[in-house]
Image (cartoon, rainbow, N blue to C red; front, side):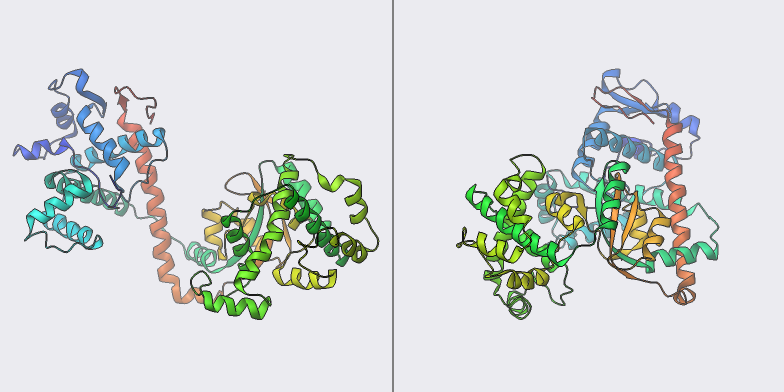
Length: 476
């Protein structure tokens, strides 16, 4: 079943009392008594919370819906553990909504159905053409229309529960808190980071890169090393995939601020390449194979998958030569069919165009590309909340200049050393114009933080007991 509705969930038998025409004006104790009557054999009970028995049929229904349908209050389960957590959370929210007397109105259900059908671009009017509507539900969800509409009702019910709880909190917000949020969102930074699991290794790398001052001779040596590695890779039959070419192409173009969509506008891209690289798109991509071969071999050597051919005497002598121009010329005669550049001067010109640079940082990136990440030119707020930069680190990086390195610091996973690429500072005077917006924005953030605490507390008080036989049982 396709996950096509981002707003669907399920409707449980916690509405049983209403369907029997009974009043919902019950105390918590009466509700517990209502649902703890021995009306079901133990083999048909999945578990309980607040002393309320949860039928096995509800449990499996919830599980199926969590697996196939999205909702704003939960994501898509990544594994069995998360699936069980979300299934029981869904059941708990459904019960809490029932306990509070929250329910969906017929008009709300109709409006939601119309939104979903419109988003799926159906050609029928579901109110007039019931047969087409029922057929569509059957094809998309493999269930009756009534179940689908109950799912919509449940969605609205839980959405209203969420809104009711969130709006019940009224946190105080200071002007300084609002200003800080403004600065977090308007200060913008682009970095490249090299990721490490251990702080010690990150420190060692940082000490090397801040002392590294690549010279013209280092560029010459890089060019010669690339030629040697490309030659050896070709001899060993290293294959290049189309995805390798596209990745290398992207990594070069991302360094240029192109004002067109190069993925779609091939004619304009061709024109740009001829003007800036002196090559057509086809020729440029073909030339990339030379560098890709060299880097694949580099990575295999770095990962100790193969012998380090650069340790061979012939290559060591070439790379340590005092006359690298002559060394390049001599080795070029060995691999005439592979050589892209007639001499070092021509090669250097092209290397500078594609920004293939010498130095410890760049060489590490060529050897271990997966260690390097670029979050993008983004707000500090994104780096702080998504990448888990410490706020003080993010603002300290903002004081650096493009090209500078920043010390090892924690991120979402392990540690990183950072290279500053680009920055844009917020204009403090802009806050006065947006003060009211940010006061409200910070209030909503605080409300949501309180909501998360409420959910945690609700789960704790629920005293969940799971009877169904599953590998993982949530422990709230």
